[in-house]
Image (cartoon, rainbow over all chains, first blue to last red; front, top):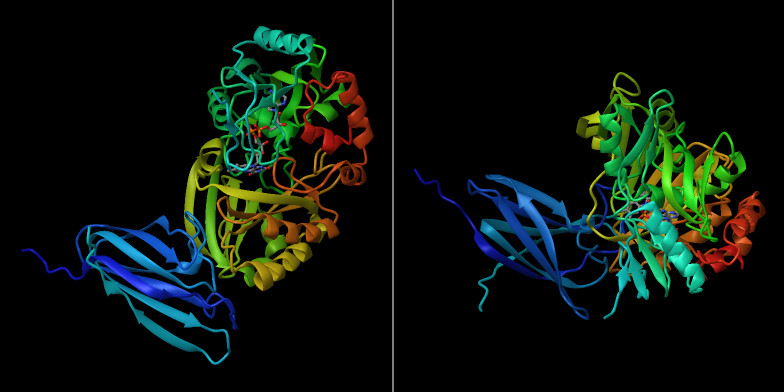
Length: 129
Length: 395
Ligand SMILES: Cc1cc2nc3c(=O)[nH]c(=O)nc-3n(C[C@H](O)[C@H](O)[C@H](O)COP(=O)(O)OP(=O)(O)OC[C@H]3O[C@@H](n4cnc5c(N)ncnc54)[C@H](O)[C@@H]3O)c2cc1C
């Protein structure tokens, strides 16, 4: 029997900006943006990320693998391959997966000690060529 | 046609008139004699992993990829003669055929033996000396074109100069290395937090044959890596979470594969100053640099030696390295951190970024003048010098 899978292969978000300042003990209270990827398919998802900026060329080539029928959450702050994403700089992202996935972006801003959390939606993007 | 040459990280580029690749010792001697006759400079390149212009030249750049392999072995002393272009990984493979091993490796194994020795390349381990300490004898073509042989027993002073010599004494055509009987090792990686890691740092360093620590500036997480002979060292690290482990010969399990290019500055400071220097660097990175820097900081230890230009000269040492993606701005970061290293009496790694020149080295190296004197005798016309080495040596 074929099990149902969820999501899309292409996703995008426009309002990224990782806060520079943090308060509280790290890593729990570091200001960060976390991408969560849900892969309900029976195959490993290979997700390619490209980040876009206001004043420089896009940087692509980030790769994230998500095991079959698993979620994976990772902090964009921690990415260094191919290069670190700058903090305090507006950016957007496009994700392309080989299998349908569901994507969510969460920002944690601890710049002030009264912590606020904000979930951000990432949009299904049907690329036009 | 342009002969552009680029180092591993891409920040050193130049176009030599010629890239030569001799296939024998005779070929090296002829090449050096020809350069002398034509009044041309020669620089010798290993795997090209250094990120300062040690090998830059407008004239002849010599590649050693045809000078590889083991060419002799004394079973009684565990000494093995290797050609200079043998990489660390190839040396490991050659040695294991003789049931022997190097005492340590650096983080990667792509460097050539002569290139690794040339800059005092090191791994980590409180009681372990750098890789150059393995060099107990050599054959070398000097700046007059003469092929000469040296050994630790017969020429201790020359070997103290030769072990770390930046390719400035001449061309090593054969290296006698001191190996040791091969035994199995266990390598483990753990994830932890910087506060706990610093609290236990001394214990981690003292209880493991090889230990190093990565600190991740954007999360305060750490990676703790140990490597011990089977049955030795800390069996487990109770305050950290084990992430990986492997068992095998040292050359198989210790070095890592790195293809993500980065720039690096690493300083060697006295062992006891390590934690304080690290704390200061961590504070500065968190206050000022982590907006653009995601790369980890590496903390290692190395035993003292008596080699004139070894950064570990007469000093039990800690090494601290700061890294940045090679395509991102690294200079402002390194320039800001370097004075902290300097304040702790730091000596820079010879193959990585730094801004020091002859005046600074004279103060940092008690036997600096002895090295310069030997260099002058070995290469009176300076055919092995380039502009960068002249700046380093104050010539
Ligand atoms: C990814 C990476 C990881 C690294 N990890 C470490 C580490 O863990 N520990 C560490 O200490 N360093 C490390 N380094 C630095 C590196 O080990 C040194 O820069 C080393 O010198 C590079 O060796 P090489 O074979 O590339 O030599 P090169 O950089 O090509 O040359 C180094 C010097 O050796 C001289 N030389 C080479 N062959 C001869 C010869 N036959 N006769 C005379 N002189 C010669 C050259 O002229 C030059 O002065 C790393 C570098 C990179 C890029």
